[in-house]
Length: 451
Image 1: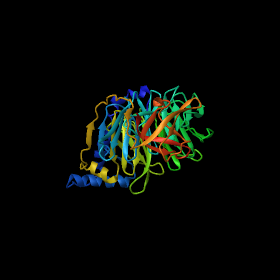
Image 2: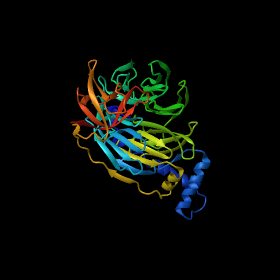
Image 3: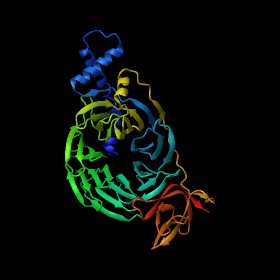
């Protein structure tokens, strides 16, 4: 999640508090030790048993990181499927191998990457040049063009673009670029939460969390303080809030999606000295490999894990400053941080046990060099044997795109980058898919102009 400029300048101090948790763990070990230990491993095992019996949360010395890529620039965009997709403050977008962090593909946007989101097979990156880029081809293509205020967050749902901006406006745009509806509240700024589902849109901002249905009608509003981040999880939506309204005392809240009822709220804060919340926050929810439901908040350079009732289970410093975004799948926690670190951590009990015992292997780490601008000129071809042929036509004063290859409906339009449309031009695209709701097609993959 992107942060205001005042918060973005605080990164230098965020690692100063990391070692106190380690010292406290050492004191706890000494207090619980009644007889000389035979081996260091025995000592640590005894401490773990004591920590469990005390009923308090565990304070780990760090996360069991599997791999980490250092991009050197604050990274906000993050989406995880079969790969890890990210984007940073200088417009560098990466597609990484999920298991190793190895670079698979990359794109350089003309401006800062605000968000990376998913819609079926498509991956999109929001950019502060006012455009939303499609990342499914070798070249990032403009999928949507926006005007007006800078957008804070985006969602694409079945081809419909939903945008929240820094002036408190929500805009919903159809696949043909027509604005379906727009709602504006000048108090609803800092809108870093916009999540969509079949039942509607969830908008988090300085005034709390609001739900709208797909017609634009507000369904409910929850006053939980200023909302800094959010994620949908089943029947709930999880948010972090309170950085401004509670003077930096950030909380994680579990809110029922149907009625907006806040089920519980817990302050995300460590007793380690020097901790402070910077406003760079993230949250997530996931079932562990054992099926236990867990909720996560990343605040002030720490990750906090809560159980289904909101009880804190453990905390651990990130050692890469505050996390701006994270996703959890089973026991794998993927993160993007304020200092540009992108990585994967294993948060299973076995991994933490190895880390505490000093047996966790050193993570695979590498630094990612700066990406260079790549030509956005459309490649030309004469080969129609692979792919689908589409043609630009003028209809009703607009340049639209139809599929002319056999086997497709000629009366349906095709969602296609607007900046390369030209009446009479034909293109060969990798793939064309029918939209989920029907009635039009969507282009997927690379686009070449047919000579």
